[in-house]
Amino acid sequence: MVFTVPSSNPVNLSQIRPAIRQLQSQLVEWRRNLHQRPELGFQEQLTAAFIAQKLTEWQIPHQTGVAKTGIVATIKSDPKGTRMRNRPGKVLAIRADMDALPIQEANQVPYRSLHDGKMHACGHDGHVAIALGTAYYLAQHSADWQGTVKIIFQPAEESPGGAKPMIAEGVLHNPDVEAILGLHLWNNLPLGTVGVRSGALMAAVECFRCTIFGKGGHGAMPEQTVDSIVVGSQIVNALQTIVSRNVNPLDAAVLTVGEFHAGTALNVIADTAKISGTVRYFNPSLENKIADRLEAIIAGICQSQGAEYELDYWQLYPPVINDRAIAELVSSVATKVVETPFGVVPTCQTMGGEDMSFFLQEVPGCYFFLGAANPEKGLAYPHHHPRFDFDETALGMGVEIFVRCVEKFLHHN
Ligand SMILES: [Zn+2]
Ligand SMILES: [Zn+2]
Image (cartoon, rainbow, N blue to C red):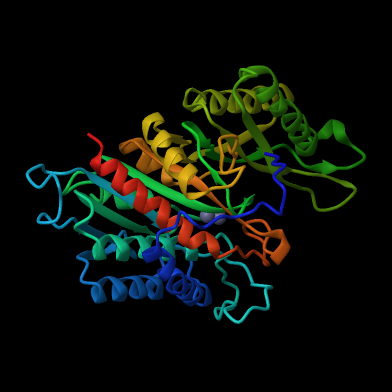
């Protein structure tokens, strides 16, 4: 993923409506408040209390304690104020993740994390602020649109995943959600750009851990042993042929061995070796193909060398796949909001993963990236970096895009 967008990309905020521009200082305040109190997955009690307090203040009905710390707010349009008052209206959901990471913040900013060893280093504090701003605006202007908007505040995106338990608890029903939107503030794109495309945006995430059982012994007497390091090395090499030889070259996929642990001394042949890694791909038809090839290679090499193995392979998140029509809607809205020569970028795929994908498996929708880097202000560190921070100008842009999508989607029949 390489973008050659100049850092001095001019950002024109003239399309952000005055009521949302007036919210900007509030959005920043909420974001900084959340940034100071980061919480890990399924421990987002302070975050949830903050969200619930705002929703209560604004008289927006909401349910707390969904999948432990999640919240679902339901905003209905004012039936007296709409042009289509006799129609039932559509139901659109907006999802924001709310968890932080186990990282010690290295930024020296007034709003730096007060929680030792925890940090909003992915921008989810901004996602919550944007979702709150959207909820506030829609509730305040409920006569200007038609239908129902559910705002889903989701815990534990980073791990172990809060989308699936929220779906299991019925957040997409009562009333039934017809489409879902979500965004990620994105430092891989400069402020003033939006990354959106139909089809696959982010990759499936699968993981494996394998233990190879050889037979240890003296480093000078290999004939008495089965060297788990030699077996493991062959496996690591052979696994590279899955992407290069078994996957269609037009389908992107990655297999990374991230860990290889074996041995205790230089003159001892290691009894066991542990290998673990991650697999990424976009095309859902690869779901079992890579896993099957991986096990066949491990089994074949172990068998040929007289070793044994234990393999754990699990599918963490499916690929994030956007609906064509809804991606086009988001793209057309974003083009208007982000009035720059580089505004909407369709070449924004990443092999990173996201559990937004579980929502998108249930209902059509669109997940998109909102450019938030500003190298001139020193706000360009990558996500999950201890110095990650983003340009807060993006917060108001996020609200404007969501509000315009709500208006356009719910009025579109
Ligand atoms: Zn992250
Ligand atoms: Zn994230």
